[in-house]
Amino acid sequence: MAGRDKGPIESWRVHFFQRHRSDDPNETSPVIEFLDQLPTKVAAEIHAVLNAVAAAPPPSFSGGGKWEVMRGGMAGYFEIRVRGGGMNHRLLCLLERDAEDLGGSSIVCIDGLSKPPRAAAHQRDYIRVRKYGDEFRKRRTVLK
Image (cartoon, rainbow, N blue to C red; front, side, top):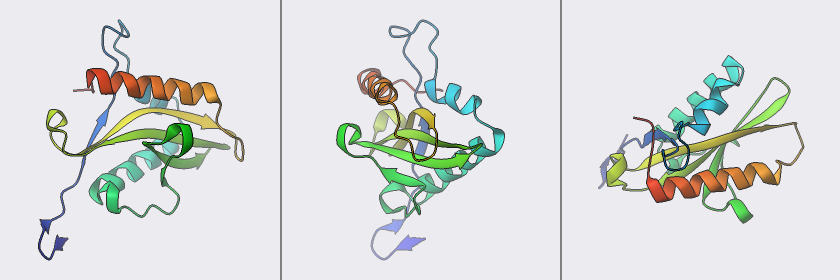
């Protein structure tokens, strides 16, 4: 879709955070570990939403509750929200606009969490996500 004066809208890139060797000798990717433990249908829906957000791109995506900005202590993060298997699943992401080191504007998937419906997420989950987000900002490591 082309804008009047701005030319075609470019999709954003999608990256998965990978911990740096200095922070984790195994260089794990928390978001991949999260996605791997989900039911296949739930993981597929998360990927579909992620691809739709990247194509929109994020600043103009209207997600009908599937893509939400976070507030309070999680301000600066965005989440993909999917239900399945009797649980609510969240994929937590950061947006990096015009990030040359990432090949351009990018959605960086940091980690995920699952929780029962109508229950708040545990603060320990948010603490972990913020820790990984800080690691990403410091080291800028993503899966290649």
